[in-house]
Image (spheres, rainbow, N blue to C red):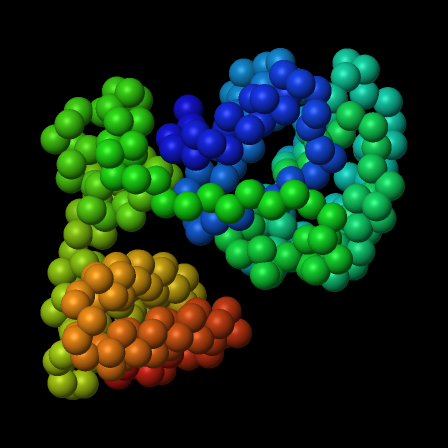
Length: 307
């Protein structure tokens, strides 16, 4: 079930009905907004099957980052081998002699070589093939690929619409109310919190930590984050992932603070907004450092000094 994004869904319903589908689309928006759910629902309508049955449909293909067998973690890129395999598979006749649908998750993770291989396919599209590229930021998609797709930007779902969608999904009003403020209009986050009580408790606790860190002396901030670091080697390997996830939540809460600040009267001190933008920049830079395997403790301490 798609929660929100009614206009985008209506566009595809009309395009399917009028047989006017384009060859390729990009669904752009932050994590957990429902890009994959929307793409799968539209793919199901195009192919005439329920979304949950797409995995076994011969005319449906999903492309995503693979797991590295040595590390057990996701690879950093979608490889050129995957792109070439996709291109070769689409040169074969359709099983149903109708449409074929491809969803490329994290299209911003295409390697340069994979993007170039995909570009050749986009320049010479196969008849009745629809490709959906999913990404958080279209600026991260290779420009040559981006220029050949129709872009739809997905935005956070309004609170009332999100609440109604969750209620229609069978959740109780009290449960819904407990996650609305934490989900920031992202259906995927709301559902994850509703379905995992321990995760909901963790996020609530992290929000309390976030509030406690603000405006405190640096030594106090360090003390309040000490529990994020473990002395065991097994858990140390996960520290960067844990802190990157924490940075994502902090970014959301600071963004909410920024929006609230901008809504204040015109005579409000503008330096507050500038300060928040500085913190958001530090968080973005921190995520890049973590991806480059810079010491997580140093990265975290650099960020909280900006609080």
